[in-house]
Amino acid sequence: MTDPDVREAVPHQRHGLAQSLEGASLKVPFRLKVALVWAVIFGLMAVAFSRSGFDVAWMVDKIPAIVRGIWVTILFSVIAITVATVLAILGALGRISTNPIAYGISGFYTSFFRGTPLIVQLFLWYLALPQLAIGLLPEPYAAWFIWPAQVAGVVGIAFNYGAYMTEIFRSGIEAVPHGQAEAADALGMSYGQRMRRVILPQAARIVIPPTGNEFIAMIKDTALIGLLGTTLLWADPFRMAQLTGKADFRNLEALIIAAFVYWGLTAIFSFFQRKLESRMSRGYVRTVLKTS
Amino acid sequence: MSNPLVKVRGLHKSFGDLEVLRGIDMDISSGEVVVVFGRSGSGKSTFLRCLNFLEEPTQGVIQVAGIEVDAGLPTRHRRKDIRRLRSQCGMVFQQFNLFPHMTVLDNVMEGPLRVKSRSSAEVRTHAMELLNDVGMADKAGEHPIRLSGGQQQRVAIARALAMRPAVMLFDEPTSALDPELIHEVLAVMRRLAESHETTMIVVTHEMGFAREVATRMCFFHDGVVLEEGTPDQMFARAQQPETRRFLEAVI
Image (tube, rainbow over all chains, first blue to last red; front, side, top):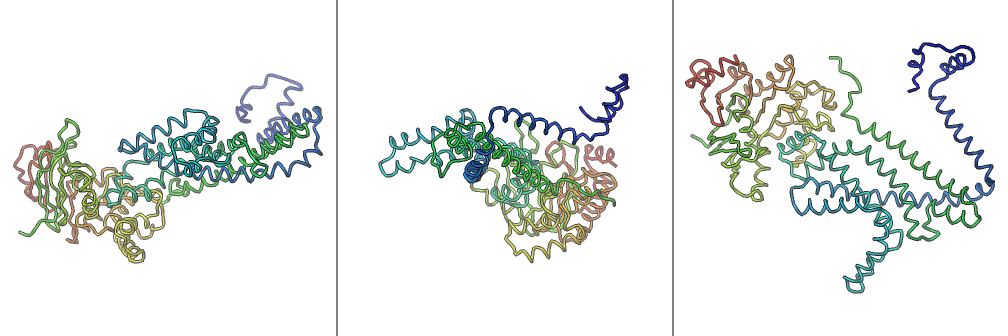
């Protein structure tokens, strides 16, 4: 859309200032212009903030307390992505299974957890599950299902994202050519060997980009866990921002810090995701063309 | 006569209403090179794939190296026998089907390492010998995508041989290759046949290869073995008009 070559091809009809501006513009690299646009956006934001009585000193003072919550976000995200990945592998094997029980359970799982709001599911784990447990189980066992907000929240997010990732993994497994399964079978491999050694490693390469996107979304959604209730120890950046911002009526400053913490975290993760993707493409991309 | 290495009795296979194999009986002795040929749709590929149960036969009994599987029995009871039978059959596919995420050497080592649980050092030595035999030892560390089709198929042959199978099954091994790459694969197969150590069943349209190498040729037509014999019998005096018509058309 802003390719300099294309612009150059347009015959110049204008004269004077407009033309000389356009001529000057052609000499500036595209990336530099984009950087300029970003700078302008940030500049406008800075102006708007300062006009609203933005308290930089207060911000600097509170940054450590809010940023500290990043460890809660990271811990929640890592646990949730691990559990979600396990659920998604099991779910995907169920979705491709010919066993009616496995197929039925995984179908129910993806339908329910993708079909209801995440926030509702979080409260179901936190508030509804204990009621169910008390109704069904004798006294000592029912207590096992009365969870702190953090546990309910992480489990809730894991099950929700596991359901979305089930469909990603299923399509990844189905994208591996059928000949691969046949080659594994022909060697006499068992179902487990075929999956572990041949199918899943190839499916992994296919599902890494969409799974990375899910992980980025998950990092952000861990902020919802705070809505179930939290302690100061388990407060994530969003929760900390709410607490500190409300106390001094500095909501704008506090929430901006929190937003930048999440933004930075997802940016870092996106960077590593790209690295991983290029590493995983080994064996699929001809990096050096054969000369013989 | 001693017990045949491969024994097929009453093999039937239907896909829905379509009956592709209509009763095949075959005995193959150790060291034989059997070329299976016929028109597309004659059932020759399905026959080969039924031998190691990549296709589930509708009916029939298959025995390879003393391992017998009856297609009529419920799957649960046969699963283990099918895997034992498969590890006695080395399969070479039309599309090679090498594992793209593994190096050439790992492709060849995978079967004996995982399925036969042999020691890594022993498997590696054998794999390198086989890669040397097919002329691919210098590419052991490459991934399959860096190889030509002919090179991939030679690796696939080494991978199948690595299991030390009783019989090698070739499913149109040169059909997916560019013409100039066919001869390198056929050369490997010819050497294999001439070693007289490997029993081979080859589904192919390469009639030149069949004439020189086959000990027996089976003409498939409409799901049955219409005629079989030595290459001399087939090429010089085939009895069935169908066989003669087919051979005249392809030569």
